[in-house]
Amino acid sequence: MGPRGPAWPRCCALYAALGALACGLRPAAAMAASDERRLAVPVAATPCWQVEDFVVAQECTQCTSFQAKTIPDCSPTGFIEKINCATSKRDEFKSCRSAVMEAHIFWKFVGTMMCVAAVFAVLVVCRQRVLDRKALEKVRKQIESIQRAGSHPANAELCGELPCAPLLPQDATGESREGS
Image 1 (tube, rainbow, N blue to C red):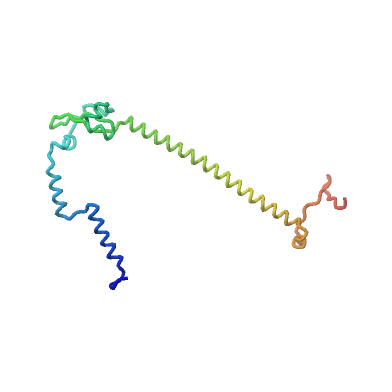
Image 2: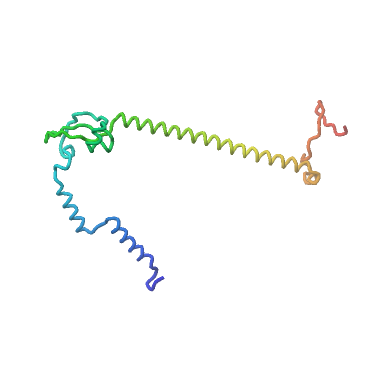
């Protein structure tokens, strides 16, 4: 503890400021300069389909190996569509997502989740069987300990009127055979 109280609030504030500077948070002047540079980007660098209306000239198709090497728009998804911009009359390529590819990925995901669900269902059933077996074993041991305690001569006086002793063998008529 320092002369003005605990030092941790000042250390936390110092670390937060250093972390903000290290993560790229800049003063307002530097941010304004970068905004000016961003606005000065030439219009030719932005694709025409981002700034004007367009018509799809060729539907979304998978890139050929040549297109994958020469057209940078092929790399994100592996599919492109040819578009025609209305105002500038330029033909450009745009990356797209194929409906067939999306359906294939969806069903692959569904199949994987069904398999995972089946595996966990089997694990739940197996675990339940193990727990049931342990519970039955516990009950069996309790019953055995009760039977042993009831047949022990030292416990006879503790039983009092309760039928603690093992049952006497009976004949076919249901009467007990004590003297035989």
